[in-house]
Amino acid sequence: MTAQIIDGRKIAAGLREEVRAELAAAHADGIAVGLATVLVGDDPAARAYLRRIDRTAAGLRVQHSSVELPASVTQDEVLAAIDRLNADPAVSGILVLRPLPAPLREPVVFSRLDPVKDIEAVHPENAGLLALGTPRYVPSTAAAVFHILDEWLHQTGVPVEDFYHRSRIVVVGRSNNVGKPAISVAFTRQAAVTSIDEWASVDNRLGSHTRQADVLVVAAGVPGLIRAEHIRAGAVVLDVGINLVTDETGEERIVGDVALGEVATRARAVSPVPGGVGPVTDVWLIRNTVQAARNALSARGGC
Image (cartoon, rainbow, N blue to C red; front, side, top):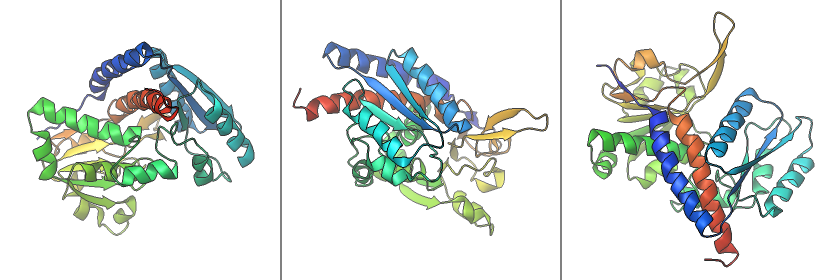
């Protein structure tokens, strides 16, 4: 078996046209859409994500402002920056880029966000709504994973609802930004869901869980964690890992959590890194920002 390589860029292009139409409808209704990002320090992965966001926003003609703070900033200074964005009527969505450098505390920072502007659902109110199955926003990476899977099912002619009802989804990784939201979204699809993390590989238990998967979502942050022996023949594998590695020539490159060449010999379909989940994530972030602009209008008593 040779897996189909899922083209995330093509799926993102289709989603981009949907979001473009949503933006046009918002503008026709007199609703301004603006995205703000907060970067603390200079983590390479966060910096790379910021560049992607800037390109995507520019391509969709969405105003994007970036607040960049040094790693030495105090927590009070970060909170003050968020307060300013919360109060800015030109900003409809706010994204705090991870990771935050020590000793900053993510829960404190995220709790300061205006829940209506919290487009990644990291505020406790929004995280709770997501866990209850009534999300204000679905975090963009988890949303992208299931949008890609839905699109692949449509393309292959598999009934979407029936597929979820009879499938087991295994999520590797339990991060608050990807793993846990992906589990919540899988529950809303009425799928059987198993959650594990990379520590299962320490005593060789990883494969006993992952080989049960009809759909394997990998978001552990460990390069090449999933190999051919970890998957069931015919599974669909969605790689969320974004890892910066240095190869034998000293050149840095981005790789996923899945050993693509090996896994492609057993899987039915697999998303690559780069070019898989990432491009869809970027566009979905803008979709959430459009929704946030409409939510803000409703909160003010508008239409």
